[in-house]
Image 1 (tube, rainbow, N blue to C red):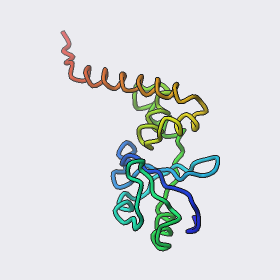
Image 2 (image 1 turned 180 degrees about the horizontal axis):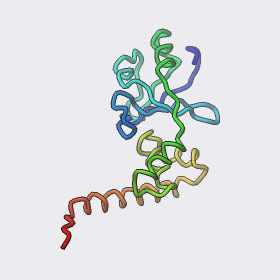
Image 3 (image 1 turned 90 degrees about the vertical axis):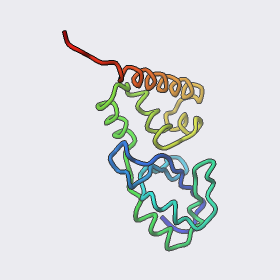
Image 4 (image 1 turned 60 degrees about the vertical axis):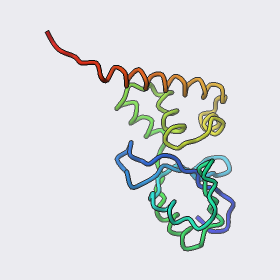
Length: 150
């Protein structure tokens, strides 16, 4: 990563779903293929430029060169497909919903960016997000139902 670019770091949730509570999910926007990964969460406390907190992003090219270098060294790439696969194995989410949880939920991508990453329409993403939320609500409600064998 070089200090003279106009890329943004888009940050999402803390990486607790993958047992990394000290790291945050994020992606660096590249022309065609965003680079997905995690980075040390305390990086966001050290940012020396105005962040666009409403949209969850930081302009990488405006960082102090030392901080930029430290970010680049601390950024660990992740395979979004593998994250979704692990989620499918550990949950009741089917693959198409797991990808929504990972991109929209963990990486905090907006509907348009998620649709682009999944090569689908934003309206389909909206419907899938609603489906995922419904599934989570049902799971939360049924988690409190006791099972008592006879």
